[in-house]
Image 1 (tube, one colour):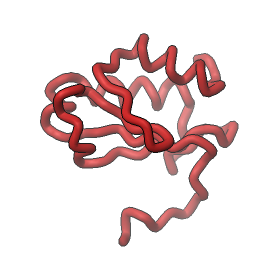
Image 2: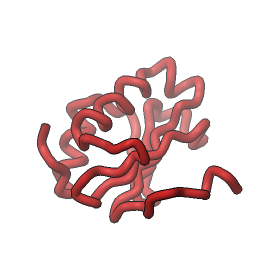
Image 3: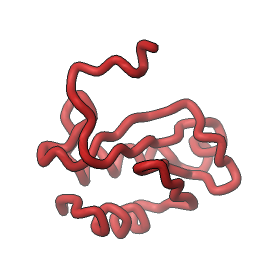
Length: 96
């Protein structure tokens, strides 16, 4: 219940970053930090342009494709910062 409570509305695209054990070992912290820098997220996890909200979750259950994010209900795995940039570009994300 409390994880669903927010002080700011969710943006157009919602990105969930898995921080489970397999994803952690495969570099999900670097993915989360890259999103923070690339999208210039505020304290609520939203980009200033209102296009992206980034949330961290304990596990997405897709360990075989770690590190993984879920964006708008779709899973994207085996991510690197470069692959993540390509994905964000497809959705109109601001360049850093």
